[in-house]
Image (cartoon, rainbow, N blue to C red; front, side, top):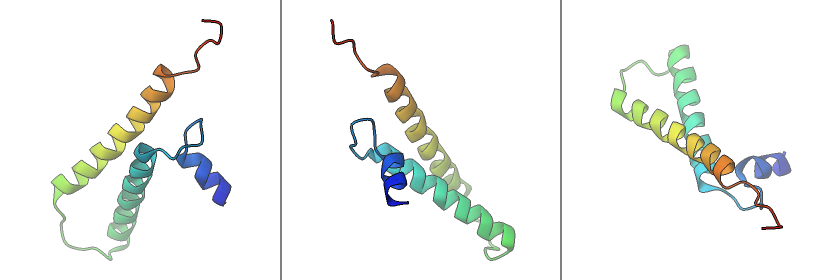
Length: 79
């Protein structure tokens, strides 16, 4: 489990990516919020802007990681 989590948050070089860590934390917080709200533990209305911000942060981080993976791919060694 430890190695799998490390690979999940690391890039190709083995360096931990802060974008991936932030995105995973945002997604986990959102999932926890929706589960607690669905079970009735949280009954009051939360600020919609806070939830939107978490969604946007997670989307931007995941999109940034995807673009970085595509645009900064392996370069040819011959050039």
